[in-house]
Image 1 (tube, rainbow, N blue to C red):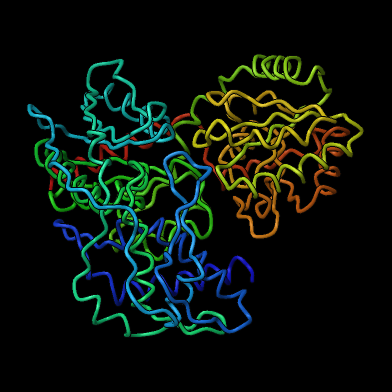
Image 2 (image 1 turned 60 degrees about the vertical axis):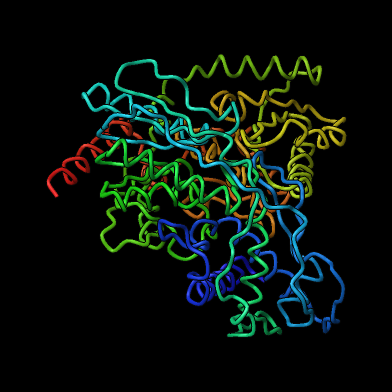
Length: 533
């Protein structure tokens, strides 16, 4: 099954769920459970569709108290990965009766109140990851220089993702209590029992109950991980806190870099209820299948390049949404990077970890995928480098969301080549400017490398999503280790022959060094709009 076919199947199921079951649980602010948690729900639905499409034999009935969904260790910090069990497959096919209980007990949270003494501000921004900080902070500094004050709601739960204390007047940071995310509990579905045997949908050769599918996916709302994946109970508490904070601040505009994950959905919905305008800044490259149905909620959408405009129009829920091509604020300072310093850093890595200094260096920008997928990607990359007569060494750049043990399994199979791992705080971003090539499947580092004229090899392995840079003539598509060898050998022989035309770069990311100012212009106009209305 191709990725496009898979995405269509998943989108159809998500749309059917929203049409039939969005109203069975809503927050006090009127936000459906499917809107709040659409990201993890979509992931689980995709796994179910893959299983059903691959099934050729009839499924046997399942009895007993086996769980429908199991939690698995995730390669991403702050996430729990879920999979559908055999009992879960049987359940949606109507071959298992009963309503098994989740083994995670619910807890009753204390209501967390916003801090007292919050004063009116023209702009409120919300952040919970380092990528949000890197994207929004340059904009907030620009706005402060223009006399526009901002209160930042820092909702992070990891110290590495925290919004820093302000270094200038005009920016105030308030922190959402971590205790909000410490409570488990699924939504109490209203009248779902009468809907379990309702409409059905066809997936592959199988007919599944949409009501049972709704019940199945609700199990991932029980467990609270942290700000990225709160339980339903934690989401309700977060909504109360956010609504109270925004009611006290009374901003003209809410600024965010994610309005599809739970906190972004809840914050934008609260801003809408309180009459604030909303601005979204794209913090990373969009990937096909990343969201389901129309999932974006902000009125103003600031995107990186012209190719993102169509995606923004496809994903927005709002008829009055406006899309602006502005580039990426965190790329404004790319031109100031010291390439020689980054090269020296990587040579030091090789000297300390591999005992060699290869003539050419490729950086692999990792993504927080499963260990199995990570090893599969590494095996292809490593074999491609081995076949370059040891001309190339590899620096592995960890993703900020990857745990410290995520890459340990890779190095055991790389004893016969020059491989080094960058520090997590450096990652691929701290190395790529000094590299001779960058290898990536879907990391935004591929776009940074493109802008800096570092050749990009786009790893397009089966069932893997890419940034589609190769489709725009901005990267070399590599489907195998042989493709990697050919691409690296070409770069080694004629590095200037792989330069990307300016028009192709601009379609992917408009880069003129003033993206922060362009977003600040959008925010300023949105404030004026809101004041006038």
